[in-house]
Length: 298
Image (cartoon, rainbow, N blue to C red):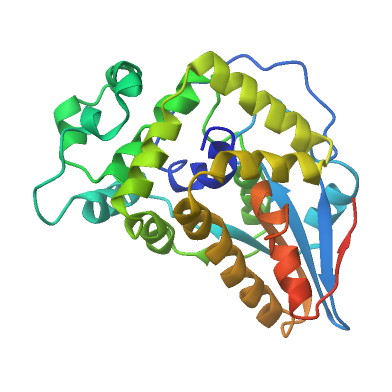
């Protein structure tokens, strides 16, 4: 789950973590992909996003900028709400086992990753005993913010927070495809072996993580759908349970919601992680299977 981390997991925690701001790299001129689903009186733009970005990264231009300006409703994966404590409380409620029985957190990853996991936990500032009391998926999600910090990425600098701020400034509605509880429920329903695969995937060398993130960011910036799909194939190839829970079922649900939304006139921008809009099990593929044509705009 290394490179897929930024595209699938971070929306769950952006409202619950605060990361330091870092110096901006030289701005890049991104050209991320954009699609359109339309009928006689409705237009839905599908925009694949990166949930965290380097500070100062330039991406709002051309058709993407025009789609943001034209839309009168924004739909994102989930609307977190204004209170980070509420999300943290939800995470703890769902992520605390009903009964004892799980081993200590270090024993839930392969032996060769235990030292690295222990180091991550120390960097998180949360006592290891707290992680020992959590379900495995919850411990993994809590370590996402440590991973972001290791990669010098900043909460609030991603695509969705920037677009959401613009829509709120224009007093336009922002809706979610899922509630936070539904999103976390996909993790909560994973079998224990899949949860451990997820946790182990987060435990990586920070420099390697940043290298892989930069490669994914470059693929997104050039609108390279094939490279993004290849990333997710590589990251999820060893776990059918993770692929089904985090990608396939969600894409299927979203395709049905978008199909129903065509009954509402007007222009809507749907901004979701880029991995959901790439590859043979993408949202577009599922819409096409229902006879709907999705056109790539850029």
